[in-house]
Length: 262
Image 1 (tube, rainbow, N blue to C red):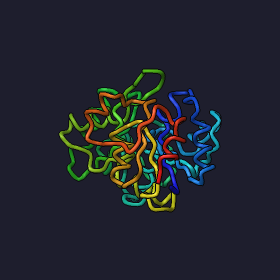
Image 2: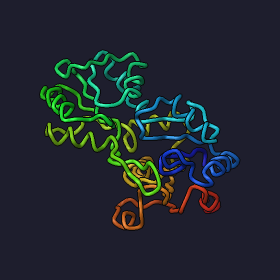
Image 3: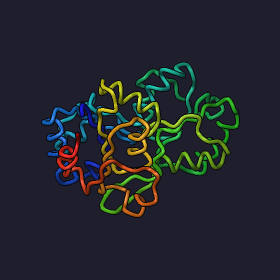
Image 4: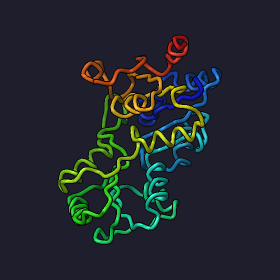
């Protein structure tokens, strides 16, 4: 193995708490000669802010060692729709990332050529109405930052994520997103391949979500490792068509995976 893609929330942290053994597990991957890349479907924080949060928790990580749904969305729109006016359902951190790529944002839904839907803790009926206005024009591009309907924030506690907002907008407008960023999208797979600089069939993906982390691993032919510290329990695993290559209780048990590799 040359690389490892590591999910963040539910895999190495839960809310503001480090999962026991996670810091040592990442160090052991490095000792085994495996480059690591944290990839999160959190679209709110910039790469720099997210990396700083992880460093405060004890991880040795720089912004170049991390990709987020926000950074991937901003990079995609700057490359593919640089001159389009964007209406954002999301938080200030996402807007900062979009503006950082030179993109133009508007608060007027009638001016939108692109609507970006993401987690928004101030989401309201008025916001939903404005999304209906923006997407009434069939030419307006509908982009979701990530599909996570819920996110873990503490012990046995979940809160709504971007996917909940995207589904609300899709429901009222009768339109599915034209592009969904974040894991397990092809856009994210391409970004991971570029960041690690190696063939993904020589990489691990370690995460707690079957429909994002493990689905990305399956699409990219990566060796997948499911951890039980996040949102997936035995019942969900039994019902899923996605079969992880390895299932461990926590990333702290990564040595068992490394020992089993050919």
